[in-house]
Amino acid sequence: MQSHPLTQNPWVIDTDPELGVVPLANLQHIDRTRHAIDAIARLVGNSACEPDATGAQPLGAWTITALMGGVQSLCDHIGTLTDPMLEQARSERSDGSTAPALCDLPASIQ
Image (cartoon, rainbow, N blue to C red):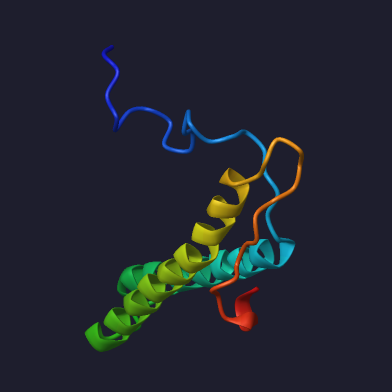
């Protein structure tokens, strides 16, 4: 099989170091965001199966649209957290020290 960008492991980037230092607080924010996305996915999925499972009405189109907008917002939040973490991990020097990170982020997510 030929190598194609869509069939390769998307989590591996050859130019990035294998290990790096990142703030644990950001990892905790990402974990909370993951749980929020999971809960929204369950709500939308359960709503889609509702008529067949229990006979109840599914969520309205406006509600589904609002929930999916919430997922998009949470994904943007993950990007806000991961971009500086990746920068910090990539800027680690060979002596183990790191360049200042998260300097332009709000204090609430540092």
